[in-house]
Amino acid sequence: MSLRLLLVEDDRELRATLREALQVEGFGVATAASLADARAQWAESLREGREAFDLVLLDLGLPDGDGAMFLAELRQRRGTPLIVISAREAEGQKIQALDAGADDYLVKPVGIGELLARMRVALRHRGREALPAVTHWRGGGLEVDLAAHRVRRDGADVHLTPREFALLAALVRHAGRVRTHRQLLADVWGAEHVEQTQYLRLYMAQLRAKLEAVPAEPEWLLTELGVGYRLASA
Ligand code: CA
Image 1 (tube, helix red, strand yellow):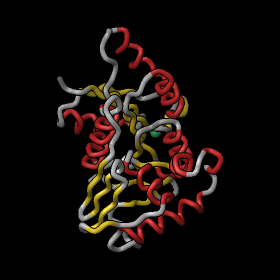
Image 2 (spheres, rainbow, N blue to C red):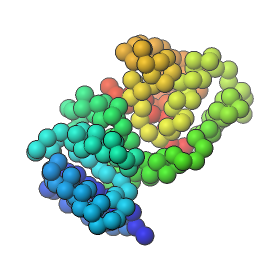
Image 3 (cartoon, rainbow, N blue to C red):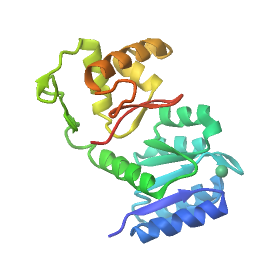
Image 4 (cartoon, protein in one colour):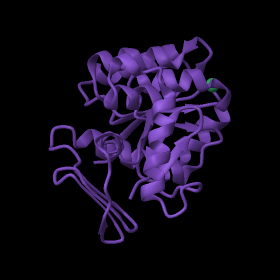
């Protein structure tokens, strides 16, 4: 059975383009052009006794309100994977949406290849929630085993401080997905330090120096400008 998507986007042209591209990939696609439309589609799918939607693609700037409101409503009840599709100028909104539980975001214009890759990660991650957490990650010559507390680069052990390891672990557990500065700071330093982005910059630089071939052009520990960091999908 094909997966069912809800695409919430008020730009008619983009909506049509994405729907067509996603249908070609075999997804069932329902569309909504406004917040009210999205709520109606969701309610209708529940009324029909279907399993609602498998994934939501959500634009934030909608004619009748902020898409983040739909995200908040969804998160109160369900863990449905949700990817925000946003305009770059709405950076604050983007961070808010991620902190509120969006799985990822994409900046317009949206490349279909990139969108499909992010969708796969989001679906895989949510599908795994009931299973043991991700404890192992490998990319190129880099290997991280959280359970064994071991990091190797080209076969050689790399020594990390406890804090460096904690930061790397926070990224491995969400590999392929963006984590906001606040999420990482809360994970590694605690909720009272979520504003201390200088900690994060310092430790990320240290991690890159130890793990990246060219620290200034990281291959794995990627910066999401103004938002946070992402460990590349291996
Ligand atoms: Ca819009």
